[in-house]
Image 1 (cartoon, rainbow, N blue to C red):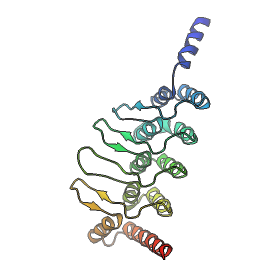
Image 2: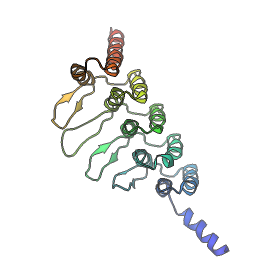
Image 3: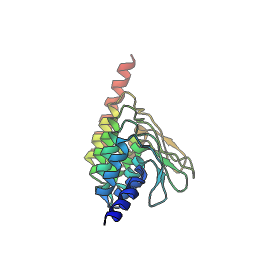
Amino acid sequence: MIDCAAGAKKQASALNLGDATLLVLDGLVDDGMQIARVELAKDADVNIEIEADDGSKGTPLAVAIHTMATSKEEHAVGLLRLLLAHTKADVNKPLTSPVGSTMPPLLLAMTVVSAGVPAGLEIAKLLLAREDIQVNAASASVSGPSTLAPLHMALAAAARGMEAGFELTEALLSRSDIDVGVKMVGPDGEPMTPLMKLTAMLQERPEDENLKRLQTMLEASAATRKKDEL
């Protein structure tokens, strides 16, 4: 028994933060979190690259957020809180898909919110609380010009009536570093600003209260910025 215990202890000590993250995401939460805390306490590489089940690669932070849209949501939240509290965690390093497309953590969190996962809002807000977050960082596709920014995803969620989408849209629009004209590029290659997209949607659904509410928010933000520029 002593030899077995010693062997298990030695094996655990050989695991890094990436291994801890995968253990947590696989449901071995207690074991994974214990290793994660030890690794972070000794200033291990918090941005080590790991691979998700679908072949995507990224930091423990990016991979954990990526998995939140699946049944692993409840496993990831505690680990993400721990990672986001670590000052050396790169909150902007993107996840790379198996085909080479990239998506930064904030945009990943927005997709989790759009998927209707309640904890997505908390993670997105924790990311926005970081001073080093790049709020306009967008996705990049290797198969075409398509690109999305966090504001686009927040607006899309709000347009479907999701209060989390409205809350994140408001949080983004309140920031001085947000680009309210950041262009979304769809599969057709046509660039479109959030206001252009919203205007087009209102033409199709002029009585949609969610769209009207978003229009008011965007117009108020634009007016504030114009006033600040004078």
